[in-house]
Length: 489
Image (cartoon, one colour):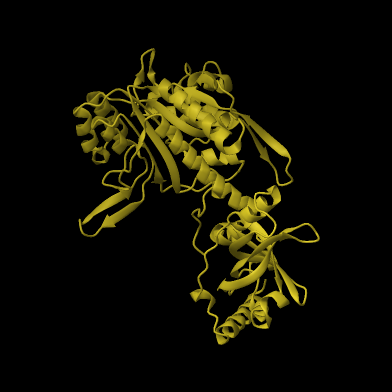
């Protein structure tokens, strides 16, 4: 809609607001207490648990309005759904019925009345009284131009939720997913904790952090890139099973799979290892799928409702070593040829390789570009190169790898996990090797904690946003984050 048209509609709505106030009605000062949800009232009337003539008080946004002269039909909607309300002039009286002339789509009202069924068979509320609760000064998008443009949907998510029921359903399901994760972990004796978001040293992962400055302390802090190092401090302190669901921040690129601010679950279990974490992840994801989706067969559909992908979560999940997958895709001699040959072959295979890319990073580039996207059904990719994960224990049978897995589903990593390194001397060596000349990036307080003794443990992280993408059939991370990061207008 053109700006001048929008402005004209806003002025019309402001005039209606003024008319209401002239009658002594201030919508924004009114109060109303509904005793049942709109969709709930409709559903209960249909199933017979709410009888004909039952009194109800419902409230919601007006999403449809049909003026029949001496009677009017309005659809009002809340978080439970919508219900039709039926207003008659002879029941309300001239004064209150005339108020309906000053309402618009998008306004909120509260209505008291009784349940009945219209001649068309529609469950409805016969209005005995109503009150205007909010005046929308802008028209809802669906009335004029819809809301299909992705950037508008993300920038003004409230409009997206208002007019797109499928979108609202996704975010309700996301809430249920997180709730199911919490209940599952608590049932296994894990306790939920909170650790600092602002940290003096950004540790626990290799990523570029966001920097902020604390004026009172006169020093810089970093928004955390991982939850790991503080949760391990709690293992040292005697909390044997801990988890946290919280935001991480990485000052890196934005893509279909990446948002600078994202939600992670991390869980740590004393006396466990990477295989303990395999069972935990498999059991937890299956529990969540059953609870929220109602099936272990996850179907992704296109806009026409046609199934484009199926993901079978039925246990047991496939387990395969990292090196085996690389050899299958890049050549059985991949780990025997010279580094320069690996570089050249990776380029020929189409991997993204730069001049400064380390040898182990070349192998990882092949994995990320050519192997990971093909792993649709759940796959535990185990025993990755030790350089990738300095916080994990070395594999006893192959010291070039660590006891780790990446759980890949739907062509992307959902959850990495490993046997945690609890030897403070070995841990210091690995972190110093990773830091190189930038020794100031080593979290000395974490190493001091390890020196006080940490029990053997397994730990895992799970990207909540990617899990939601997989379970709810969404192709972009922006479609499971309420307010994704966008370039400022």
